Each structure stands twice: as C-alpha cells, then as structure tokens.
Length: 513
Image (cartoon, rainbow, N blue to C red; front, side):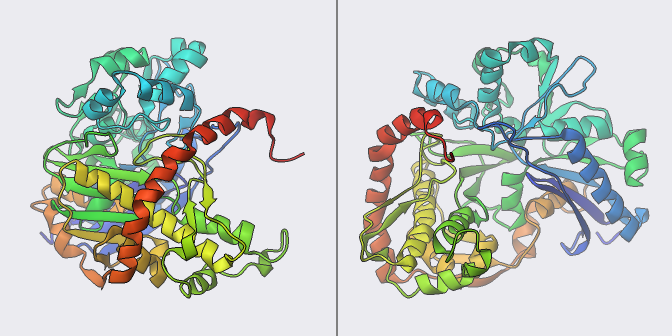
C-alpha cells in the first residue's frame, strides 16, 4: 500500500473554515491548511454564507497542501461537509441565494407545525432527519411560504458540497450521507421521498443525483485544476457529511462504539449496519457508506455554555475581559463543590436545542437557585447540564435498540478533568479519550482511501486511532446524576409552555434600549 500515490487529501468544509488535510495510508498527517470565512446573521434567525468564499477556501487550502507535498504523491481528493445546508440555483446553475446553514432557524414555525402533524413522526422515521429548522426540507417549506419568487426562479436545489463539486468536477450530485440529512431522502430505499417532495413543493428533477459516498468523479474542471495545482485527471471522491465522518475520524466505526464530541456544540453518535430511528423520534440516522449508518443526536449547547457563564456571569466588571477568570480556573473552582451543584440545575438551552426533543422553542434556565449558591455552583451546573443533555441523547439511542459498549470522547473541553469526570458520571459509563486527529477531515481521507483501493476497509480506523486515556465514573457521582436525570428531562416539558409564550412576546421585548 506504500505506493508513490499514497496520499489522499481530506477536504473538510466546516461552518467557519475549510481544512485541507493530507494523510498517507498509515494514517499519518502529511500536510494541512485552513482558511476561514464568516457566518453571517443579517436578520434574526438567519445564518448564511457566501458560497464563493467557501469555494475559494477549498481552492486555497488544497493548493497550499499540493505545493507542500508535491503532485506525485496525491492519489485523490475526498470531501466532508457541514450538514443540512441549502442553496437555490438558477437554470444556469448559478446561486440565487447564499448558503443557508444548519444554524438558520427562520423555519421554526414550519418545523413546529410539521412535527405536530399526524405524519410528522413517520416522516422523521422514514427520512432519518428530525423535524427541525436545520432540515433542508423545512427550509424549502419556508421558501414556498415566504419567498415564492425565489422558489419560482429556482431550477435546482442542493447543498454547499453539491455546488462545490459541481464547480470542481462538473457533476451535480449529492451523496447518500447528505441526502439522509436533508429530510428529503427515504433512508430505507435510498431514493428521494415522494411525500417530502410534496411538502417541499419541488420535483425530483430539481435535486442532485443521489450517489454513494464512495462514488468517484471523473476528474477536475479546468478551473479547479488551475486553482489547486492538480492534474485534471485527479480522482475526486464525493465523500459524506461531517457528523458520520467524525465517527470514522476517531475510530468509532464498529457497532457498540460511540463517538461523543463536545466543542461549541456537542453530539453523540454510533455506527450501525442498517438504518433505524427510535419510536419517539429522538435521534437522527445518517448514512456513512452503503452498509454503515450513524445514529445519534446533536446538541446546540456544548462548550458555548461555559463560554457564556465566563463572559456574562464570572467576569468582575462590565466589558472588563481582563477581570474574567480563565475557563480552566472556573472549572477548577467548580470541581471543589459536590456533584449536583447543591440542588442547582441548569437547562443549557442558550441556543435553543436539538436532540432529543428537536424543538426550537427551548430556552435556557437555572432551576433551584438560592442565595446560598456561589459562582462555582453555577459553573458546575452548566457543565452538568451539557452532560445530562447528552445522557438524554444516549437514552434515545438505546431506545432505538442500540447497545453502547464503548464511548470515545473528543473536543476541546475534554482536556479538563471536570468535563471528563462529569461526562462519564452522567453517561454512567467509562469514556475513552483517543489520540487527537482532525476528525471529519481524517474520516474523509479514510473514506477516499477505501474508494480508491488504497486500504481494504474503513474498519482500519479503529486500529489507527488508539485510546490514550480511560475515565471511569465515580460511583457516588453517577448515582447523583441518575437521580437528577428524570427531573432534568421533566423540566424541559414543564417549561415549554412558558418558553413558547416568551418566544411570541420576544419581538416586543428588545434586548437593548
């Protein structure tokens, strides 16, 4: 396998940056480059991006990697992309809209209506995608109802990776992974879903061709070859969504091995051999390959919760950043108080929430607050709230019939012992901390290696990424979290009516004068 062309460049198009990372067949990183771009929020609920800036970041990153390692070793490119994006194209395949990202919530009312309908749960279980404003299906319903002129002009609809591959390779295709995250594809038949298309008000001909994630496109356009420094004959593997590829990137590819990531947001996912959704619709189900699927849930509020506590509660004076203790100092303080934070619970829904309730109505709250609580209790309750939310996701995964034997945890916050120990206690199981890799970018490269015949199977990922540390739950702490979890879950439903009313009142209650 150590041939001259033994390097695949994994191109990971994320929400704030694109990384191009080259790996050889041993899993060693050879070169990397990263270029960022803004996530624009021009109006409340809007979260959009310029597709040309993302394409430019892809070109620049790949060009830098090619210049560093040379053309001769590069066997091909393989792609990862942030999921749930939507882009309208005219009849000449030019963008009519910016990229509407997963973070865009303008379709909240449409999501609540479809979820409450008689066919909402069946649609979720058939397509694998929760009924949530992030879903391209709900975005399309919003366009049908709110922007009929754009809908009338749109000849095609796709995601950002579909459009980038169109510019780079001349083919309008979408992989089964991003198709399964669109709310428009029947995950059991691998075809566009007729009922979803009817709700969206579009025809099958307006969507890209569905292809396997290992599909290899013929090569590059003249534009892409000139922009990247690669030959036009360079193979391009279509790739998959960043969520499933993140599992692959940390070696969580076998049934029973889950990947838990906590960055700004968080997620818990496990690979399975066939698609499924739990009876209550608490989890998603997205494709990785033809015979590998990822089931789990993403949460909006991970490390961002502690960031908010630090900036808005812990700092000493208004706008005095220097007075704010570091995140590590706050966590060290919080570790001095017992599990349960003295009877204080935080619902960490600062950015609303996704799994397992999939409602944009949720809002954050401290419950049980008394004068006796100190800063360290508020910090610990925030960490515990994130961990308990992931525990609810784990419950939904088990309700889908999944046996979770091992959990591999990654993310910047996991460097601190309090996050490690709290997560292990809330999940009630040991967590493994694997050696660091570039996550989705490495997963894309491995998928590309399999597609190009450089490795036998993506199963080699489990051996390439060993677990360096294992953290076991403290029995007493785990017992506390097991007691608190049902109450934490009940508080979501108990506060939902009040949050719904506040959401309706919000336009008349501005944040600032």
